[in-house]
Image (tube, rainbow, N blue to C red; front, side, top):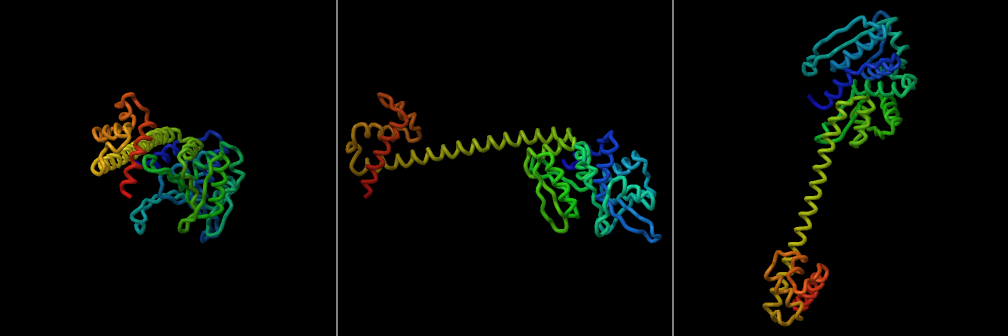
Length: 309
């Protein structure tokens, strides 16, 4: 099971005790998956159609808890979409009108509906609405791989409404148009964790945080190892250059051409080609610090450069 499905399964099991929160969540489900039209007999017709069993079952459960019972509930397979199972809830006439009024749904063009902001006046209702929005059209990536949370909407106003709702909790959500959809998304790990907490998906939040901690520790260790590797490589390259310059001096004018203290450090470098500056300083008598050793080797480098010229 994907991480998105784990989150949706947990959200499906959450049932708000308050009537106003049930209304807010159901309003989000219908605005995300519902269509409204007038049927052949002239009756108002609302159809909620989804490929998600969680959306269908949660919508039916919330309707029943609010005293509304769909006239027609069906499950069918749509073959031209790869034999996908589609769940359909349909409401007609007075029942459909009651749902429109109760859920504060505003008809849009092309049969779409949008929730009126009045259903999310309370903070608890905002949480419930976000649960419904995510259940109907949301996804979140596996935290082991990347951080990405999104909800896709066919209507730009609904996407803006969701982004504003998420923003009311201090989480910055952005929107983008992808093909014919308006996508509300968040890509920062800490903010996605906050969203899971807002939707009250606490089990998913614990897994997300555990994975995030492991991932960040691993990345930190990798950065440290890469840094140490780069430093070792830099040190090795410097030592090799010093060794080659000392060989040049030895084979041309001889190391005795150097000052006594420079000749001493040159001989030590030849005997210890892989030693660090600190280790070379420890071998001197009297001992010399890293900066002192580095100063002498720079003098040798300048001497070798003059020889090359």
